[in-house]
Image (cartoon, rainbow, N blue to C red; front, top):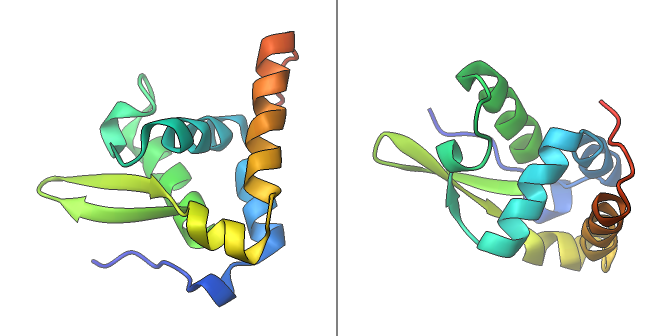
Amino acid sequence: MIPHHPTRDQIRIENVLSSLGHPMRLAVARALATGGEQNCGSILEGVSKSTMTHHWRVLRDSGVIWQRPSGRENLLSLRREDLDIRYPGLLDAILAGAGTDERSGSPASA
């Protein structure tokens, strides 16, 4: 099965904000922003496969990540170029805000 990846023009701001509004998906975006392409099993440890699959689908369908098969697993990467062209500065602002919250000890909402 080939996963759905919206084209750059199909990425909608409300879908991006909604997908990054969940603490677990925001953590994934932060990990991908600093580490480049990563194996899907290495990002969210201690999370069930069905839960991970759900979060990957939300991020992928909203246009936040690329997901590509590699053997028996999938590799994930952030669609930074597409997001930066579509919404300049948005991703940087969200990731910076998340970093500020983490450093200040602000609790994440579920």
